[in-house]
Image (cartoon, rainbow, N blue to C red; front, side):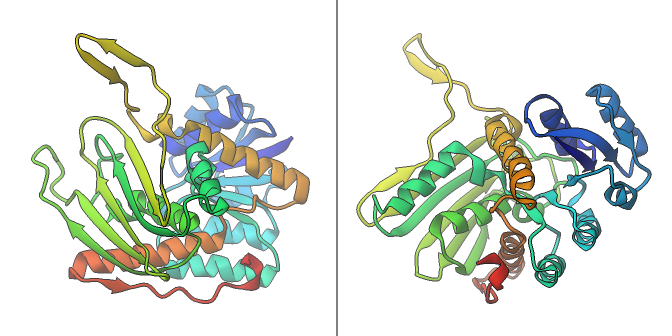
Length: 339
């Protein structure tokens, strides 16, 4: 049983604490830290865990009683805790994005390369979703041939936070598709162009311009389009369709009861990402715990390199959004550690 230390006890941190407390075997909540001390103490109380409340992230990381670390703090507070974990040789599962910038994420990649092994698993949980994993298996089997096109949809009923702004559409939301589509296509991106659609009159946020459309080109010439709509009103809706040379495969909708009544067929739509991807989060943590227990290191995917690529692509997307132009994406050569 691994003693798990949590850095960050906000919304996603609380979800993960409850997950380890009640659902995923292999770990126990042994320590928590949040910059708002009351948030950490409330998590301990609410979930009835026998966990120490630490006074700082480094105090938690440096404690020999903590075997592994989960970083679920704000995106701009990931770098230093992760670097400290690598420095002292402690495995860490961090929420996405790896960091706020490619420059910061490269520091994590370089630290792992210098150490000669991986310590970091990045929380791009869609790689553990059963639907996406089935898509990956079908693509790798060659059943529909080489991929030519893809159409994706990432719709939220409303923004996740009150401080969610235009750039967050890319850095906090679209970044999921950036990672999972690179994984499904199995190749690097070459260019991206972002466009902003007509503003939704039901969008209450003055600093949030959306919906947005991403047009991504891969190195082989395939095209990926992604619609990102943060105020769709009707629920949390994730779609992905892959067009191959000899067939098409689409992500299945979550299983929901179908009601046939009053000349209509209806079914519910998930209200939020927490419900839609609950199983993927569980599988992500399960893979992390099992890999650390079995091999001493994190699961094979997603790596710090994957997080770094997502940052590079996200920054190109931001440049396109701000400058209203197509932007080329230049991915450096992958270090041997990640091959």
